[in-house]
Amino acid sequence: MMRAWILPMLLVLCGSTVATVLTFEGSLGTAAALLLVFVTLAGVNSPLIFPRSISAQEAQRRSAADGRPVVFWRPGCKYCIRLRIRLGRNARQLHWVNIWGDPAAAAAVRAANDGNETVPTVVVAGQPHTNPDPEWVGEQLSPST
Image (cartoon, rainbow, N blue to C red):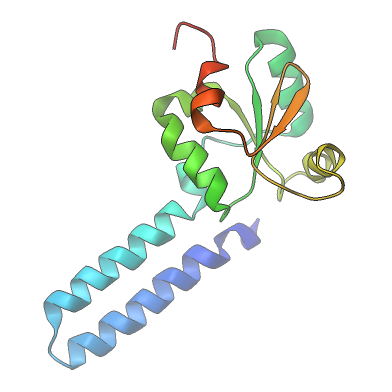
């Protein structure tokens, strides 16, 4: 799980370093602005913006029971971030599976994508869809959204 935090930690470290240098040069406003940008980028690239991940097996069980799509994702993936942000609150209705945290999930994604771990892979009614349009994913949710 530590692998998911490498990019966010590097962004905070780099932002802190740049802000420190700018502070010593007397550019407090610029230092604060750049630090804010780096911290925001770290937050967006962290697992924190995603709903709690579950195992692939649990996601498939829940999807069979409620018909909601399963989203296979990984931290740092810009397409996963785009999907999550564009879905807004509706993202919590999907079943999210982190392929870095579940080897079975990674295997399922490779099986659906010719051996590649391409994410996001969204499974709707047993059919995988690689990097689908966020609007289409939102339409796959129940009409009560």
